[in-house]
Image (cartoon, rainbow, N blue to C red; front, side, top):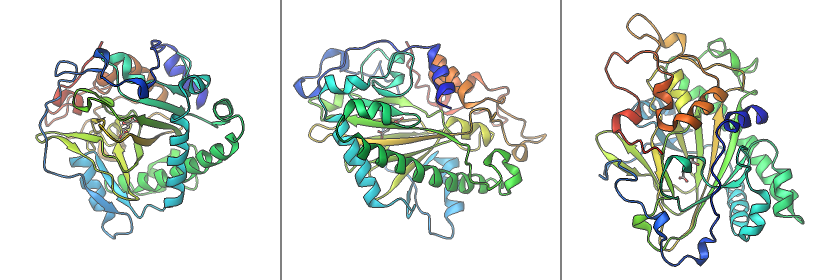
Length: 368
Ligand SMILES: O=C(O)CCC(=O)C(=O)O
């Protein structure tokens, strides 16, 4: 997977931007000041809230299915990831992003690479800069971490490795809950889940995000609106709010942190697999005047050679397949080129209800 995932980005190298020391910026530079034209998603705010699911609840499957259809996002509790592990990940994130810029740059992501420290990949689609820093981990983190922490990198490597293992187990469990609600319940229904139906061959990347406190948060953007290219994403956020999701007919809805909770996003590949039943959710991260914010996104996809297409159980004379088959690598390629138009670029037919995908419905694309 690592080499294939990097292949997807090699054809679209990221522009080289100057890495600021955010702590030295006491005013928002013009290059970071967003206005309506830079982010034309309607600025309405809803009073609705994102569904919260207790995974120990007997009706979790139904609630998840409904949440995936109506929101494309939900939060979970009783997910089995210990608070101490979440605390350790938060500690590793904090110590990574508080290193001096010159130290972080020793582990910089190369322009055509995928792992390492750098700006959000989506930056190149927007004219304004985002008030955030990121660190992407694909495969073992050792090589980069020993540049960052020559003395105690093995502690941080162990934390990340354990976290990825636990996330992988949880992602497999969530896959069956999400698919189960669509009537996809048998091992044979998803052959690539493997002989033990545990999605052992799945691919994943871990994205660590840091949003420093910002002198002018109302005009800044932490991470611009986007959908994830994944099947699903598991997001841990610290106690500072910032995540918002776009709900058709309602506007932007805040997703406040729930103590010990995790946020689950439906990604573009799940939208394809569900033949458009599940919405991949448009989301963004806002920033805060007095508190910094940390998040870690576990980006989960199929094994690299597996083609994702609308599941045969969800296709029929009145439900033609809406999308052509794509591998994750191929889809990442498409996303790196077309960004929010990627989903419609792999669509082969318009849904019978006449609705397009989330990006077309709210017309929030800001490219170039
Ligand atoms: O920090 C957040 O809340 C969102 C992160 C995110 O969307 C991402 O890493 O793709």
